Amino acid sequence: MKPQEVRVAQSAARVSSRKKNLRKNDAFRRQGEWFFIPTPMLVVEPKSVLHREPIRRGAGKAHILEQAYRAGGERVYVHAKYPDGVSEKEYERILARKDTMRGSWRVMVRNAAVYARGTVRHPDHKTITLHGWHRVLMNTETQTRSMAKVAFLD
Image (cartoon, rainbow, N blue to C red; front, side, top):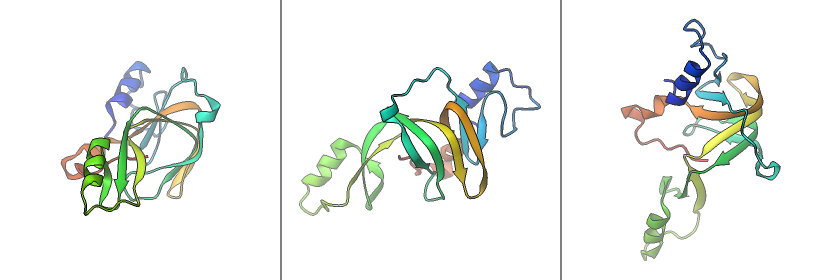
């Protein structure tokens, strides 16, 4: 269930087959369903750093990142009726209808690149510490047919 980026990082770091499935090796750290790949060349503006940022897959308990940074992604509009979000074009079309609910919309970002440093906490896992920025990737379990309707929103 490793993302392709994790496999590439393992290959580049020449991780031995004996260490490939450990929670920590030269290519990544792992906590639960999240992989953290070192990104030593990443430079982040201090004002862009988010503190105590939750990340979660679906409705589960959040993992809390001491520091996080997001880049890119697609802006979506989320409503109780549209929990996976809709594009701006679809949002405008929905608002143009007379029977639409105008309030309670949230603007969120889908599929942004997420980076973390510092501690990563979760009540079901041992806290880990990331020294320097790491790319955050979710395991590929969401890409199975049974998870086709799950969206990763921040």
